[in-house]
Image (tube, rainbow, N blue to C red; front, side):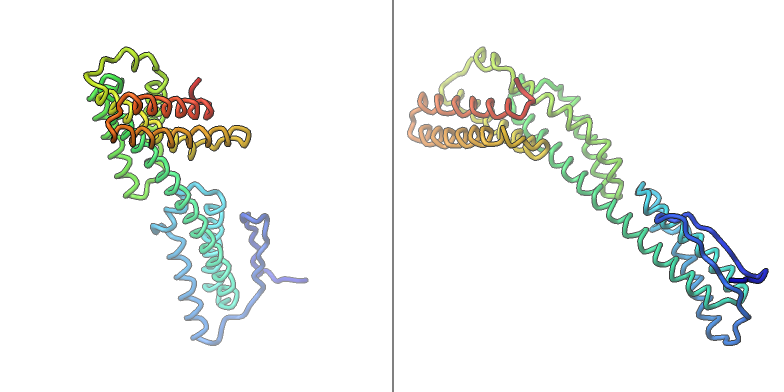
Length: 288
């Protein structure tokens, strides 16, 4: 195929690979309406691919495919402008159509990235606040984190929440990650200190039962979070579920016995429930 000197040959490295776009020679458009419509389409593409918020979000998303698509759309906008200025309105319209397709793809990919980022943040936020709630439910002498440190943790959570409100989910997750890890390590250490309970002096069986009930609740919340975060392999899943079910049954028995005023039997039941929680925690691999 022969082309004159007015033939435009541009090569684009698009996300799908190397694509060649040819704009064949054309005469100046005779129809003013066609030229005007082509000009309007080119202006639209230029605005969509300019420095607008949606485009900035594409680059902020870090999605390589989305970024490649928006760059390709910008190149097509430049080509469409050259074509419409040269009077090649039909060619310009085709370039605009390709550019709009790339722009739509870029925005969709960036939105998908944002949705994943938001979901990851929400899961981490639930985990962090749950761990903080468990820790604060423990006796003060077991918490192992100074009140000033707890205040600092609360400030970090608040900062992360503000970032999330502004759509900065990646930064919010970076803020929460170390907090969640620290709280989890502290909780595991608390529940692994068996001697603490036996050395503690209680004023009455009711006081001891109340203390152990709080321990049980903390265990259950921690185990729930760990099971979501780290699914067990099939080989240990049944034993884990059995331990949790046994713990739940024993806890219910303890509540009934305590309601009947049989505190000694209630203590035995809640202690056995805790032993099953400890077994379940060992099965997760975070406690030995």
